[in-house]
Length: 325
Image 1: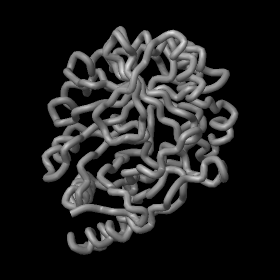
Image 2: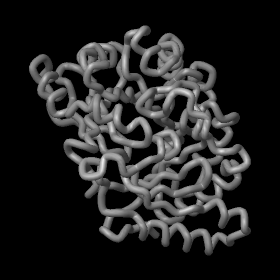
Image 3: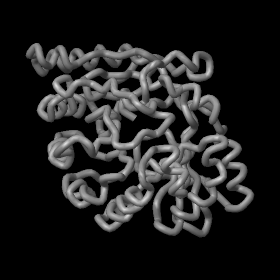
Image 4: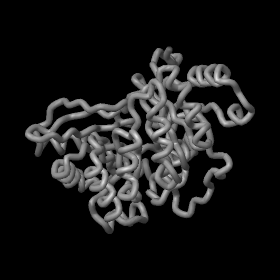
């Protein structure tokens, strides 16, 4: 069984938000002072999450990524991960984090069946990190080292490259990842929510980043496990893979294989569109498994062909933290 959208794409990857809250305030993700979080009684319970993911697994979904906000601000995430990793059909369970609390959870997450980590890190400069996120860089570094010690491999560093903010650190981040055997992914900013103007103002075309790196490094095509959209190159003479995620300069909509489930049970069918389907009311009205399967199949028929970040940059008003990464 499989989920095929109206454009022939197989949907085998779901990004699962377990909270819209975060212990950092990256300016391009969540405005300072924002307090419009989802009420806890609207969060899907672990039982509800497990049930939805079980149905997705039965319909051919193989990859699940736990996201937020920051997923580790919700209690007992290793317990949820243990439940999800045991579900039939789920072959790959990963987690995205800012790593602020990862030093306390790395070992239990690894034991729970989480196989891979994606860590957001936009700068190696403590002062700049404070300006971007409001947090402390040393906590993230501690979390990264704890993940490495726990046995996670690969650990992927996600760096949003921003004009006038951190584009001068691209090579330093490459050196850091070579030193610590991390994978590196560069990401273009996307215009979403009230922070969308900042994304436009600080946008960097990653083709220019690649060209700059090729002046210093010899790079050849590379591959990495995972279901995401990054295009990878390997730095010759090292094990480093560098991924480029280019939703603006080179969109990858024709191969999109994912949907997002927000903490309140809303399925978002495209990061750059407003198409959605609400599962929570159905779950709490006692829908049967057959009914839930039918609802999910219907939701996939609503998936649009592509985003319109270039044509309509102010179209999506929800924040990235609300969507689920």
